[in-house]
Length: 298
Image (cartoon, rainbow, N blue to C red; front, top):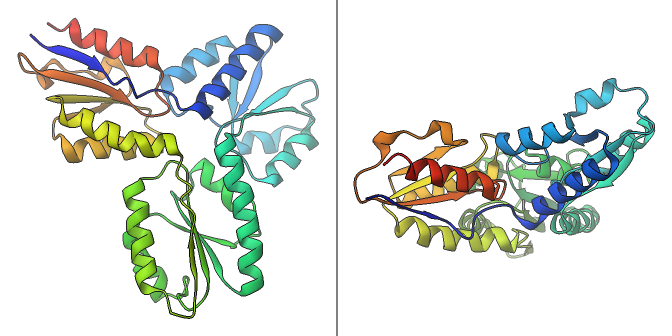
């Protein structure tokens, strides 16, 4: 008989919990719509639930087209935004509900300070992150255009060195997007350190969220202790892709789904120990729904 266990360490991170709780409270108390600049969480099922309550998701193109938004409120999600976006939102007349994660807020401040230091020395600020990710756009937007170089993979460092985008003869400060892989960051850090000139200084800031970092070891243990892993995450979740890839590297019978409707009976064998886990953007209620669906297959 198949047994099913939900990963007790999975589910929303603190920043997402804060943003969703704030949105729910506003929608219940104000009984009016609330705009969110970008998806408040990268999970389609949870977004649908919040939209049914009155949350309206808009993007920056929508914002450009809005001329007047007085008496409307707009939520800045946990990923954060650059100062230019706040200015635009205020000009439209929105009241801002700022739910930027405190960890991201600190990173934004640290990025600005590092940029000022490196500009004075002729050095460079590097950011290990996913190009185009909302958090990365918010971080890059803290300084002047072109002031930060984003490195997506440790393997891409050599090309940046060869093209002189990264100069190992100059001081460098290295940061990370808060949700990146700790092992990937360490590989990049070690590779860059080995290539630095003796006269230049490499300052490394380990800015991966501690909650995210600890999840990697916890999830590794969870993946190894089950026959099958059902990993639940939204298709747009960067954190979900990183964590699901980690599971697949340890357990070949890992399946990535975004809802219980995607589950196939053929994935399971009699007496399988099935683990259900998810990203930091996956709600607990969805994990429970997936677990119940698997149990009802028998």
